[in-house]
Image (cartoon, rainbow, N blue to C red):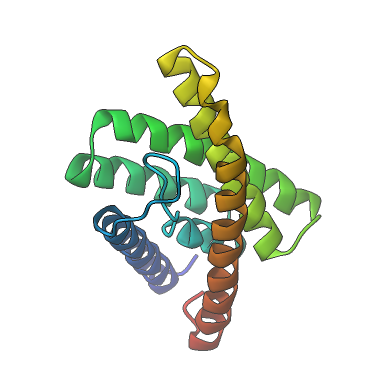
Length: 169
């Protein structure tokens, strides 16, 4: 690979990491009550979906892990990092499988990622609090995961068009 192409690729990945971190920060300061304590909109996940479809699996997981660790230490807690990693890993694996099977478009893959993210975090919460009583949050989490997954997929799809037109790939 040409050196200038490598530099361009690293620069774009760095910008996307910054974008994901900014979205994480914005999400942390905007009060959102969706009926479940700690529920968020999942805005940074649109960057991960974008990376998965534009760059690949390695870049997607790399930026996702870096975002979680960096923003966790900057704006969160170790407990928050644990929840973020659990949801992100399950979500990412789900999105990779759905994408590889070519079952759904980018919005569908993102919806599946949103659902998997919320299920992963709920399972970790059950493990930590040692009760399955928090399963009553499941319907709200599934609705929220589907809605935010669609929104993130919709925005990522629009961003892909912009990136392709601007020759940032």
